[in-house]
Amino acid sequence: MKAIKAIGWTMIGTGTLILLFLAYQLVFTNFITARAQDAAAEQLDERFDALRQALPEPERVEVLPPTAEATEDTTPDPEGEVALFSEPAPESGEEFGRLIVPALDLEHIMFEGVDRVTLKNGPGHMPWTPLPGQPGNAVLSGHRTTYGAPFFNFDQLAAGDEIIVETLLGSHTYAVRESVIVKPTDVWVTEPKVGAWLTLTTCNPRFSARERLVVFAELVDGPNFAYAQAAKDGLIDLVRA
Amino acid sequence: MRKLFEALPGPLAARVIIAIVLVIVLLILLGFLFDFAGTLLDDGGTIGP
Image (cartoon, rainbow over all chains, first blue to last red):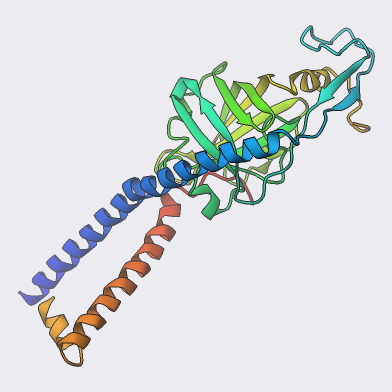
């Protein structure tokens, strides 16, 4: 009788612990992130106000003579150059921009870094990749089911959906090109790319960290669009640039 | 629960303080445990070796 009672209490205790765990992960962590996002929203506006006046002049990059493959979107100025706008790199853990996905009604402040502490505040930028809005492959990671679950519905993104990133330079619009499911160790998704790309990574499936859902989006508008397009068309000597 | 409380050493005031400290320590440990176990549900979605 005593043993049955002990087993009963153990099961009740285990069940309570599991319920507490789920409540902590699926509810409480959302409050932590919501608080961090609220605080970051104010600090981001202050950062933009303080640094926008001191942005460096855009670099003028020479455009090579066009080839037959060049698209009409490449619009170098009459002097045969395109502008390359850059912005100062944010500090580790610092908020540096907004991620907006109209199709999912999503708006989140982005932070610099993909360590566990930073990702509790919101989507994070892999520091060894270019900043969003810059040429190359900018990589962002975010939680799928906990800590605000910013990327919860990313499986619903379809080719052509817009992803807007606001940084110090202004607004950069990307269009979703492709989604893939990979292993967490598939680092090829973060490798440099020609043009300007935004790669968003999150856990897959929901409630599991077994795989990664990766969304690739390409820059279609923004300060560095002409540069990215010229680079994609092979009109920029990337070795020299 | 009451038996556990009564098993604590010292007078009533000391037992109350010990109980509060134990509960706080337990909650902190539980927080760490939940945080660690949470990475099984969602580890942030990063890519890396």
